Length: 269
Image (cartoon, rainbow, N blue to C red; front, side):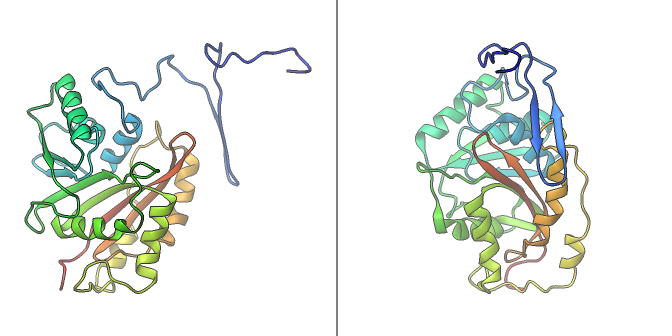
């Protein structure tokens, strides 16, 4: 600015440049469209960034006829993105907040998906579902001053683990604090479920080895793939939930992790 007299117009720039730097890569890009990729005409009230929600759903290996649950659905963004991409699936969203459920219903109605997604007012720690009845769980674990969970993350994961069937997938969006608590949960020697789950079952190491290749180029930079395996090496199993993939993503001023787990065995076995 001093040398060339350039001025930055942050509201209506001629060109926007994105630069991501870390110890391994430098990634430079420019937007192709004036409208951000996260903009969705069918979402009336915005919650989680749509591109992050789509990336989470794409990691979840959703198949036709599956039962997909978001037990803390908020405004329903994850379920909306999943239902748009994978329509032949049974979707259920749950939340304890009336205002969040009302906002979610408005979004479902605006997207024409009110008949595709069922909403329930229930607590994530007391889901009215049989054990091992859910194929896929995708959820943005709330954080921040308004929705701070703290140590409740253990109870939440315990209930998710209960309703997920063996071989099922969980994809979670975690902040740094939640991510650290999950790491400490097993490293401290405390099992996730009350009965205790062996984490040295045959086959667990096999589940951890394959790195599934999913195209997240629109949302997660190539540098995240390098940090994915490094973060995965530090993630122990949480009860019967075995870590498969973990990506660090940016939510603007906040950094978070998209973590994928697979249930390796039934509880108590």
